[in-house]
Image (cartoon, rainbow, N blue to C red; front, side, top):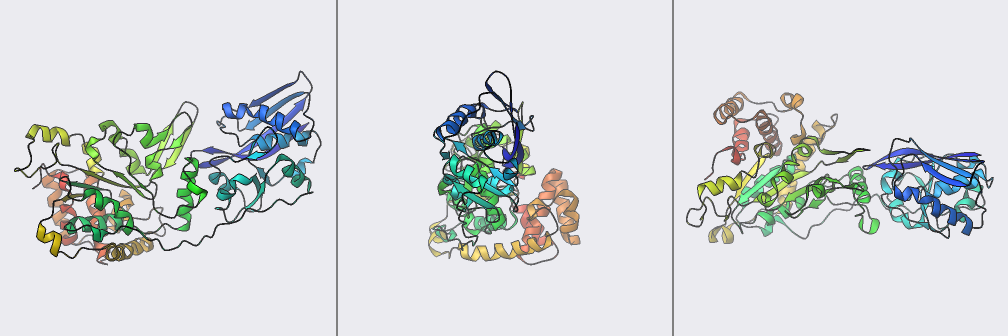
Length: 503
């Protein structure tokens, strides 16, 4: 007696197809689950046994072998309870194996046969073919409603699923959430910040080209206020991107109210965060802060208070937009395409280069700034200095608002969308080195200025490329097709930390 069902397993945020094979044969009574199961999967035999008996069916007295194939992929969680129970009932002749074709079953069983919801379901449902149907616990309806194209049915009990497979019961269909994305509104605005117009322009450029940014300035100069308002000028998520972000939060068990995420994430972990909390992983792997900030902003306030080892973990994800976690039994890949934003004081007391307030020695300033490694500085496109505004700046300046800034950002974003429509990237900051020459065309004056800067500062090739990408964004904001010396000059002004000290 043999039966085979279809199911899925999570690998990071990706769903891998799994075949649940059940075999009943003569021998001493036993129940074995093989195929690299974790503790929760191994314990399924006790839940399945009780659920079948308490649902009115006879449990087979023979040797039972359940194989979760492919056997070299680790299986985790309680989502295999339902397909294992159905496979056993099929082997006992309750219904034909043909009734299980083109169907997927996911759910945890209580001892009385009631179906309990499982976590991280959304990535699995997104992989089910439109021509197939999937039966899930009614407690997972909110996540099922996020998948508009798949036939998803809801069940409360094992008996309902069996009756549905036999054709004696029509299970209710999962309701669908509206795919319409309303216009986003924000309770904060860049107009709240006065006297930092240069920093605002720098952040507008960062939003337009998705450039990593560092804010440097004295305490109380408005660094955190500026950073928290950056999401107000970012382009809205597309419907596809909303599902992509929601899948990550589903796997991380952070999907509040099981509603689709429509805002770009803004993650701001404390400086005491562990490396594991930043990258993700653990005994039961979950996405870290870098993955939770995918398609949004990762903001590290008080950057130089973070452990240097923790900061250096940012290097590879900033370049590759993903995190690869390699363990003894599995390798997981989490997306991490975030805009890196950070703020810091320039010295331990916070007031350098104001010599009237700063009490730090030159050696202590160098030691403090050395926490930020050269390779990480190289990966930050824009360095912005903030200062405490004067009374005249605070009162007389007409502040730039988010509404004005987002118009320019969307103009630049539209140009990038058209330019890169046939390429696997969306923003100027993501142009690969092989395509920089194609998309970053320079005037002769601009090329001369850039070459002079490169020879004088002895900067890295990475910094050289980042200047070109940043200049491309500046040209887009002015709807210019070619990068001029003016764009290069402004881009060079944002490389503050390439100089030994700044004034």
